[in-house]
Image 1 (tube, rainbow, N blue to C red):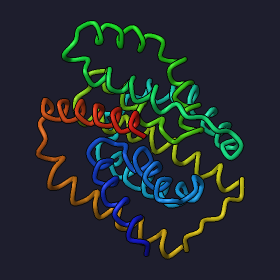
Image 2: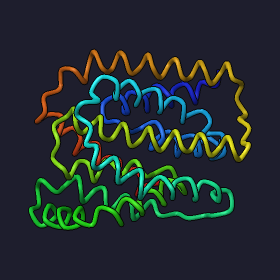
Image 3: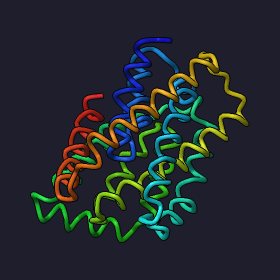
Image 4: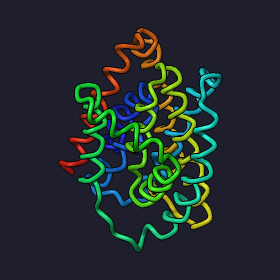
Length: 238
């Protein structure tokens, strides 16, 4: 079992256990930097992401914003599938723009003008979700835009995480189905992928018990803002 992937899975699974995203958002660029190709990274990370999100959905499904999720299905998912088909022939680096936007979202509570701008942007939810689907299909970074728009809706911590989780899991499921039809082969064995999956689930269970369950809504919102800020900075640095 490659140690570099093991450490990546542990770190990103802990992040996703708290915020609903992380395994794909951070795991993909890390594995690319370590020398793994995009599609091989997906074959390792997608099942882990789906498993963690599924456990989050099972626990708090009653808090899901079904109206928002329906719009994600309609406006984001088709573009995720379409762009993943062409990802091997398209090269697009927009991480700086995404990172800058995420930082602005993270700072909205400190600057009223930013909060007003975000509120106006959310009114155009359907075009936003379409762009999110396009970016996720191309780069696997759609999770950053997903967290930004959900953070702007001022949910409590359970509604925030589970709404993100069901959208993110749906992204991953359709990506996995698309990879199956493309006929992508993983450079890792089935036993290795299963081991990574099991480790991801164990990390979720520990993080859920030790960290998430003790977070109050106000602290969670603050942590989420910090998470967005760090995400944006890392994207810009990348």
